[in-house]
Length: 143
Image (cartoon, rainbow, N blue to C red; front, top):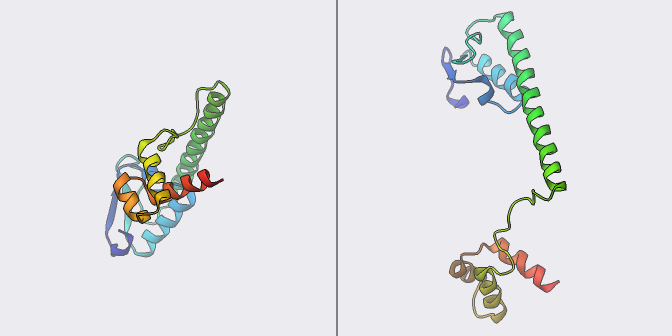
């Protein structure tokens, strides 16, 4: 989208927090938009208006970007704390493994590989097991 941006174009966003992941990314985006003499308007944050060089708007962008970054960091921190607590209580075990030790497709793929009559691509196609997963399982079996 930024490559196609032309002078006097206006980019409308629903919320300033949805267009970038970090404060630094937001400032880089705003600088790119200003360099192309375009503007950015937010439907939720009506105070945001880059159509003119307004020092109040720049100040508010800085403050709001900092607040949004703080909010994201707090959410991540609470999430990590919650996961640690759940692990201690035995409630959090992480992502479930797709190929457990009794997975029929994986076991059949290993069997076909050991027979040596088919290529890895053929085995993966028949058993619907990815190449990386098959090689990972084979290295586990061999060790």
